[in-house]
Length: 371
Image (cartoon, rainbow, N blue to C red; front, side, top):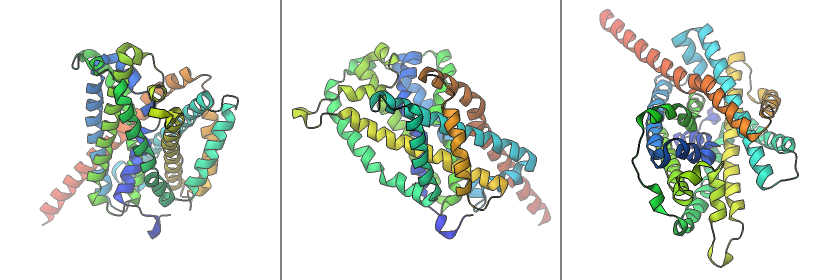
């Protein structure tokens, strides 16, 4: 149930979306861009960013048009109950699967860089329990956590980026506009899913105090994500070069090894970067658990989402352990996002928006004839 105390500001909604989208994508995005498009990978970030802006606009408009209604009620009104339940089952599968991939990649990174002798099952289980505790506390706790951690993410990144500038070779960015149109079009689907998480707005906008004025905040979050992705790509390719970047699995973590503070002010930069990324990944996992529990609560008419959180955890846990290696994790992720992510992120929100516009026009014409 949504009480009066379960409302959050538009800024908090936007920050939640920002954290959710960045998640694990920030770790790997520069590498496939360099491999597919070389120094022109930034063009693809802008194109996919524009697509994300369009989708965010549509989702925000839908939730504003039906203020106070949750996505189940809106979808029932526009599509009918049978199609709604089919659509939301696909969305829930996508969100739970996304949570499983996030926690598995989190476990792989932690095991590789910090806890070498700790079984990955223990790392995953511990993170899931911590995320579940936060999620059960409600939307306000989740939103406040997302806001509180921002300075601890932004300030260290700005300092590290400034120190790293002296080691960058910006001639590696040339030629800056060498685009193969066919390769560019082929790369859009896989790159767009670095913006995966837009569909979470369908859940979070329900909690907005003023959904009518939410658009500027949501678009601001998307623009911030585009800037972060562009910055990570330019810095990575300036540091490693086109061919060197294409060989990196996690460029952001590799960059941390290149940072040298004067007079050894801070010795373990890699630890700082890891801490920042852990916070972002943790927020993404919280969003996945919370959003899936809210959707299931509405679908099965459960009184409180917290009763469903515990049942979701073992599903995410066992799904996360299916891939036998980190290489397979990314292969499965690509297939999974093509099948379920395309529908949840693009098809479903677009369909709802088109139906909402058509229904609104039909109602307007009917009222005009009646008058």
